[in-house]
Every structure is written in structure tokens, then in C-alpha cells.
Image (tube, rainbow, N blue to C red; front, side, top):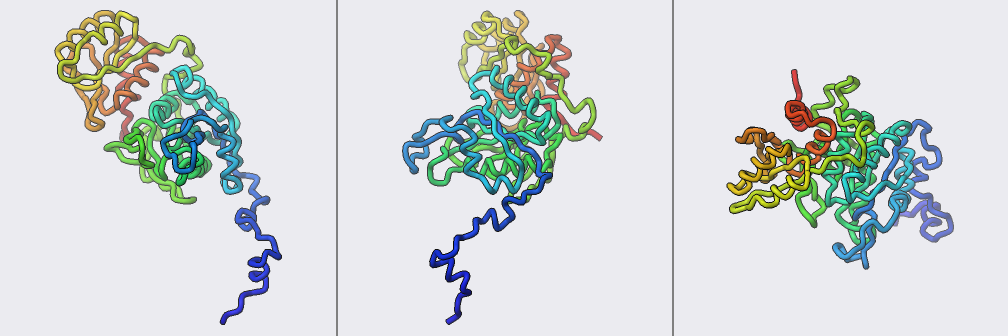
Amino acid sequence: MRRLPLVVVALLMGLVPAVPAAAAKGAGTHRADRPEVVVIGTGGTITGVAVDRAAFEDYDGSVLPVADIVSGLRPELDEVARVSTREGPEQTAMTDYYDLSRQVDRALRTADAVVVTAGTKSLEELAYFLDLTVRSPKPVVVTGSMRPSNVFGADGPANLYNSVVLAASGRTRCFGTVVEFNNEILAAREATKTTTLRLDAFRAGEDGVLGTVDGDRVRLPRAPARVQKCGKDGWRTPFDLSGIRREKLPRTEIVASYPDAGGEAITAFADAGVAGIVVAGDPSPGEAGALRGALGKGVTVVAAARTGGGAVYDAHAPGVLPAEDLLPQKARVLLLLTLATTREPAAVAERFARYGVPQFTS
């Protein structure tokens, strides 16, 4: 029989303390040039706690500080970056999005990248808001989880670790904000939640994912069109929050279309003084009449598809803007920011065409 080396025997008998894996990889001798990544927590399932380890859907969200989740990933994170944590506003209103975007830009004055952890319910809108408003070209990655922190197979630690790997790599500089989920990298404009239960909750629609994070390997076969303007003035959008008053964010709404849909909701919104309405689907006759009335009251109307694929290129109604392939919830975010910066119809249309549908040009 093959004899084991004495050191192995001693380890098995507990006579010699085992060397932690991180120490074996060089923990304590981290490179001084590791990038600085700030993780900003905004609550959600990733910091939630379930009643027991098998209670995948019975839990309280936003219980733990994000620092607790990060501490559970050390020392592995320390091999990747110098990671610090901060708490951000929990995402319940557009003013929270505003505050978070300003917080991200402040962090990026000194940090090399930011990772935001968020609840998945409106993660896609949050990511798109950051994509349109953050002024720094440094990497911004948004992630979350579908399972709370203490259940079997919790996905939050892996998603957060992969997001830090991606952010620290610097590979998404000038991409704007991206989403990392279930090892996939998605553009903020295209990421959408497609299931309430499964771990592969976020998909990128017809355009597909940007790439993947596989261990320490970041693969990026494609990029958002805005990278063409990296380092140029045109890289930043006109949606500079430093020039927009937080309490003056315009109210925008979404109305769904379906057979026999009435126009009362549209009329009520217009009478309440909303600045813009996104219509998801082809308006019913009742809605069409109400939309004409809303347009007459100065409400900006955008037509979006409710299918999750394809595009609306022609709204077929005077004064109505097409959202092309922007999902209704994304079109609402763009409409809100556009109306916060201009109400001139031609400028609104230009910003929807330019920033809502960025394309590569020769």
C-alpha cells in the first residue's frame, strides 16, 4: 500500500493546522495595485433572510447590511480587489434612483469601479436609470439574487463575487451600466426580468448578452454602441442630474392596452398633470380618444410594444413617439429623464431616437 507523506498524516490527525486556501494563494501579500471597488447595497433579496434554509420564497428582504454579504466572500474578494461597502437608498421611488446615481458618481471620483446590489423587482429600471445618468465612464455593475442569503443554493454570493471580478477587470469601461446575473453580462438597456422564481431571471432579449464571467475569465464578444464615443464629450448623455432638481422629476406613467380598454385612466393622468404617458400595446378605440385629449393638454405620449420583442417604429398617430424596441418600463425611464431636461417636441423626439436606440455607426 502507498504510504502517505508524514505532513499529510499529521494534517489528518489534526497535529498540524491546515493552511487556509486563501493563504495558500498568497493572502496577506495582495498586490498594492489591486483596483478599488465600492459595493453599494440598496436592499433586496440578496440581503434577505429566510425563516429556514429551505424557505426559498418565505423570507424578509433587506435585512442584512451589504457589508455582511461582502465579509462572507473574503478572503477570495481580497484576491481580486480592494473592496469597501456603503449603504445606498432602498429603491422605492424615482428620487431614490436619483440619490443613488449621485452616490455612484461620488464614489467613482476615487474608486475604480462600483457594484450596486439591488432587489430584482425593478433592477432593470434602476440599471437603465444609472446607465443614462452616471457621468463617470468607469465600470458600474448592478446585481442581485433570486434567493435570500441563508437558503440552500443562495445565488447572491456568486452574483456579487462575479460582479466584483467584472468591475475590477475594467473591461466594461465606457459601456455605461451593465447587469451581471447568473454568470451573464447584460447591457442595462436590454436586461429584463423574465421569471419570478428561477435563477436565470434576467435575459437580454433579441440582442443577446454582452458576455460571461466564468471564474476569473471575463468574456465580452460584444459591447454597447456608446463605446464608440469613449473619451469624447458625446459619451455622456444630456441627463446630468447635477442640473436637475430632485424634487422636480416629472411624473410619467404607463398604460396597458387590451381589447375594450377604457380611456378613463389616461384622462385621469392628464388631468392630474402628468408630463408623459407610455402606452404598452396598440391603443383601443377608447384609449385612442383619451390619448388625443392628453396630447392636447401637453402630455408627451410614447408608444411601446408589450410583446417583449420586436419594435414600434411608427406610432401611427400625430404627436406620438415610437419607443422602437425599448420595453415600456425602460421607455418610461427615458421619458422621465428627457422631460426633466427639455419639453420641446423636436428635442424630445431627437433624444428618444439618439439615446433610446444607440447604434454603431461607420
